[in-house]
Length: 357
Image 1 (tube, one colour):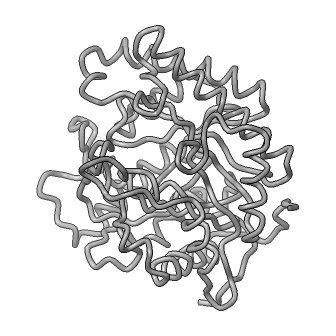
Image 2: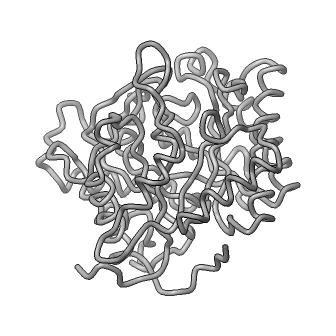
Image 3: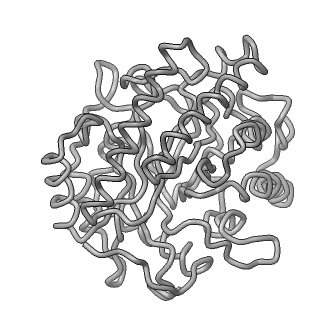
């Protein structure tokens, strides 16, 4: 396949794999933002490079309480590598200063405070000219176990918190994307994710972030056995059955999808550091990977008639909980970039990406 046949969507790398599951006594050390930016900047496939980065608003990368001067330095740091900023992850979880969206009044207040700070940073980065697209990512910051104690009441409380978060986002001209993942209560299955989005009912402000790895786990019913689509003991050689299951999930959530993560998964779960067990992200060429990534990306990026939906302006690679040794190898990012280019070549389109730095 040619190195680059389309200009859209833009190609981004996530910086948070340098943070997520890192730090603490039982985990590998953090990888600093400068190193993650440099590794991304050096990736090159036939002259094509990453267009930008998505950021986690948490120390030691970018403080949720960053001053205007610190944000200007961040802009310069990103721009010096030829990048723009896309989506931002709000630190809504209790260990990062937030609180459960279905929790006490104080928990929910802390959740909303972190959402407000993230939206404010998003707007400031737009004003600084380094960010022209992207969303603010949130989730329920609640465990499936806690949620299961009172499923309908807890879903109602999450929906109410998310509606308040939408009011905040509207005030800053931002959009929110809820990341469905097996470790987030009320968002841990494809059916519950659709239910929550419909209950919030703010489609202009709250959409869905589809991560290819996490959505594979939805088909298997991890933490939601009643919603599984693949049978117990599923034979992974039966590609037709996987096609049907993965397509069903994508069709249910594609109308809500406003942020998209390209990823590979080996159908197992992993936890690291303080992060709960969730879908294991794999390298693009991992022999145990279960996804035909380029093909299955089309389930999200194309409609049922096969036309690009053009609902996202950039796609992002998510390599959460890769080992530091893996992330420090330049070949890792060349391989990732090559896969991203293949996804864009197959499902992208030609139009100018409206970014000026």
